[in-house]
Image (cartoon, rainbow, N blue to C red; front, side, top):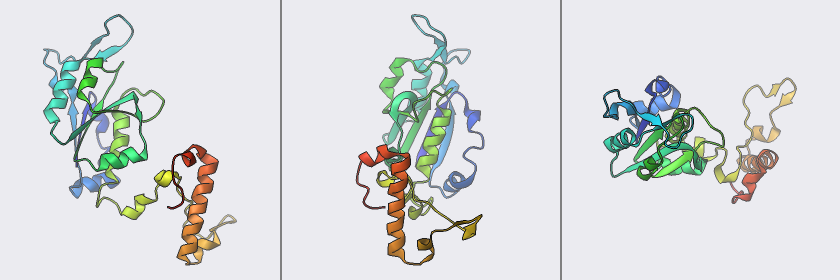
Length: 227
């Protein structure tokens, strides 16, 4: 997979993809991540990429031409162009899986008062990471990269993400490690039993219980009879 990120603030990405799983994924050639400065595609003398909104109002708006030029410079027949915006479809795990099946993602990061409306003609999808407003699309794009790269074949073991929270519309089951007894809190006996069928049954029951307590809205969305 290749991921191109278009931004006005490329230095925000310094080091963020140079640690942990994403670093190893790049070293194993599972993903190539390239950061592009939208200002490099401005055609005016001062590399200006924003201007005041027609009709008045505070804040600056990203101009269509440099953004269009940046998209077209990296777009291929396999590209999915995603605009990061609070007006977009709210991101979720199913979308992460869908994105992980793509060959090429282009993530467009907004800033200031947003995009000239005409830019939307050149994107395939608009994504929001939640019902709140950030200073720009850089941090949301990092979220997309992190959530997608870990799902690529060969990056982590499939077992590590097949039972993630939000799989089968359930939150993840509780997990424990050593010591068996910590300050009077003991690991459930079933996890020490070695009986795999009972362990799986317990995990499913605990996932349902946790989901009902913390995110009952998820239980209305689909089948929860298996992990």
